[in-house]
Length: 132
Image 1 (tube, rainbow, N blue to C red):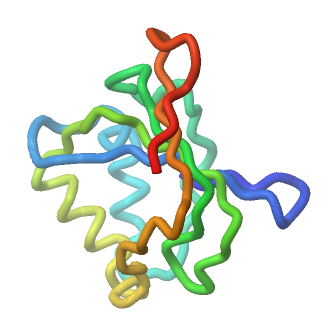
Image 2: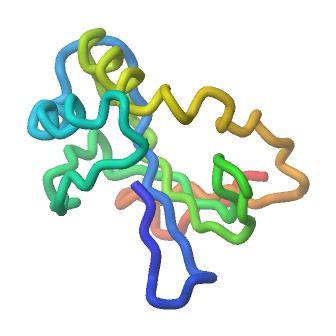
């Protein structure tokens, strides 16, 4: 999920990690919208309430990175949930069909840390833990 503020230079990404398993409830809600995207470049799915995202953990990592798609803009605040959620094989296939037509070669390879700080935040910690 990408958030753009009124200032076009401020961007934040919330990233959830997935593995194959049980269907994801949030993806189930937007199933029809994803089907309508197949064969198109872009479709408005309406607003999604971020509070509906089921965070598996209150621990998350935060770092300053870049977008993963061209132009790979730098200075993006990334928040990555520590726990891995599940998505069904069917949901994964639907996602691929919905975006694959124009997103074949847009994923940026993993980058070196380049002295980038990664911070682990947890309610059990008095202060965030810095990892680099």
